[in-house]
Length: 233
Image (cartoon, rainbow, N blue to C red; front, side):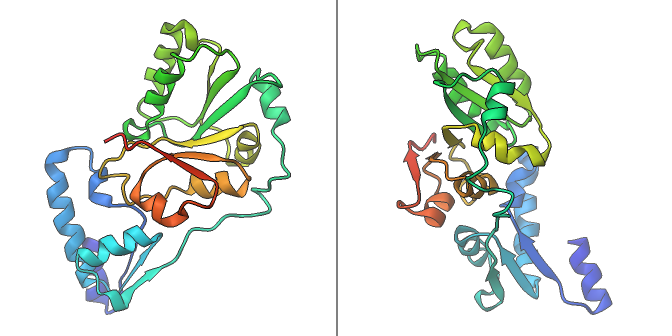
């Protein structure tokens, strides 16, 4: 709001770059309707609106962004950095992963909507020591995951928590995985999202299991190595 006002006062164009349905990120739900109103006003007033994916394009137009001034500029990946030829043997050794272990990997913030806690609890029910879950990142359920791992005997050696790692390590950590996960809960904050981790997983040639999120399904379809499951609504 303030930036748009400043741009108008200075007589310069204002471009709204939307990467998420931003009002859903406001922690206090009481203020989300106000955030939505401000966002809608700003979209209508902007000289141009840029979005990351098709579902966001549909969303901003529905909220009043002029179609003729709305542009889809998709996300990209550094193919030299995220190269399938990069193996994860070193990372597997570092975290005690054996050659015949099957590693599921979640990369990113362990937020409440991430679904990673639910995956960990389901993993504890599977009686197979070879099946492991590696969580790369931190967030507001990270400490809960540590407590769950310590509490449930079935997870003590199978839930690998790396914490936040330098970005340069990410390709090798993905390379250490057998299957990559996007288990987001299907809620307002995630329905139009296409997280950058999806492009990173796929650039590394990994099979992906994802929740049936509208944005992800529209972006990748059914023929790009993604298996869709459930809805978690």
